[in-house]
Image (cartoon, rainbow, N blue to C red; front, top):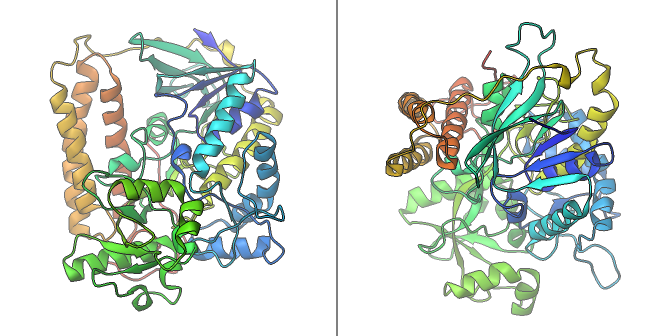
Amino acid sequence: MENFDFIVVGTGIAGLSVALKAAEHGDVCVLTKRSAKESNTAWAQGGIACVQSDDDSFDRHVADTLDAGAGLCDEDVVRTIVSEGPDRIDELIELGVAFDRQEDGAFDLTREGGHTRRRVMHSRDTTGQEVSQKLIAAAHAHPRITLREEHFAIDLITTGKLEYASHDRCVGLYVLNQRKGEVVTMRSDRIFLCTGGGGRVYQFTTNPEVATGDGVAMAWRAGAVISDMEFIQFHPTCLYHPLVKNFLISEALRGEGAILVDKDGKEFMQKYDARESLAPRDIVARAIDQEIKRTGGPCVYLDISHQEKEFITHRFPNIYETCLHLGIDAASDPIPVVPAAHYQCGGIRTDVNGASSIRGLYAVGEVGRTGLHGANRLASNSLLEGAVVAHRAVAHATERFRTDGSMPPKSYDLPTWQSGDVADVDELVVIYHNWDEIRRLMWDYVSIVRTDKRLQRAARRLRNLRREVNEFYWGYRITTEILELRNLIETASLIVDSAVARRESRGLHYTLDHPGKHQSTRSSEFSRF
């Protein structure tokens, strides 16, 4: 049994921001199932949306966020996160994060879809890497932070099933030490899930391999309330190339004047929205999907060739070099693009402090549903949310949590880890086949445009797959592959069930059987218990 004041799962901007702030109050253990540098944050290209110029305001940023969210944002939450953003940016800068600046020292702000002002702070086109590297360095240097790589959080331990417990709260975690193949029990009364989203549930995604919905699945099994999982954002512009499957072409290109064109070089976004190529992501993704179906082509194109080559190579060096390596010169050639699953707007229901429906369990970043994004995320609001909610979550956990009158965590006898048979998996091919089937059926039946019939087909097949996955989980020694498949099937099922429940088209959930938007602003919520 290991005891920590705080346990953090995940090493993106949310997890490491939580860890650095929590370390001011106690010992922190940070868990990550791969290396610390593998996170959704590290893959973020565009930047962080934050009011920084005189021609911008919090009110404008709030209004843009509410407009993108299609009526499901919590305005109080939006205003809190937007207004507290500049202070969190200052903290990142103190850690050494280098945002691009103009010659006069002012921030070099860019604009992305849905924004009415330039407010996206960036570090060229690799903002996430810059943020990730500086946070990891700070965490490694802190004496009260223990960073454990290749440690996979399996399940939460709660008091809900203990007869002598008067409050349902988190008291620990079961964790697989992947290097040793052993399960470790860790005790803490303050657990922060910062695991990112579940983009790998889809066949085509911009997400890294680690994005398998682990946090949502763990919280769901523990009985936490899950909300709005039907709202999966598809980024409009993922590079279309047979050798590269998940390379994102940043929305910042459109912010700097790139336009979407068809195979004949003709613009088409004016048919779908007055904002054309700078419309919010849900509108642009559906427009591209419709153009591809209309023309029968495999993709559309993003053209920034009217900009000077020097500007393109300076502002977007990573994108330019990646495309050039594949034989595409962005300074003269249009870039082939298609939509791909990108961001999970729903998740573990929390308040603006990241507090979930289970005491002691916090969800910060993409894994949590605070009410900031509503039915569609405004571009570059995600890193902002991670930094702001991390700050508030630690403050909430340290200032108020111990006043709830429940027993301290060390008073509980934690149940021992139980697993199924100890046989080793004999055929990994079956696991990989199930993985591929989940991702393909989600792409075919539960992607940009949906119907009741497709959703029902997906739900039936997922029920069968869940039984097969449970047989693997209880029948063999647990492995990373089994745990990820288990979480993937839970996340996929939650997305489908939520989509079935929403009988309207709103934001990222667009269904041909219910094309209208209802007046209700009800969120879809599910709890296992």
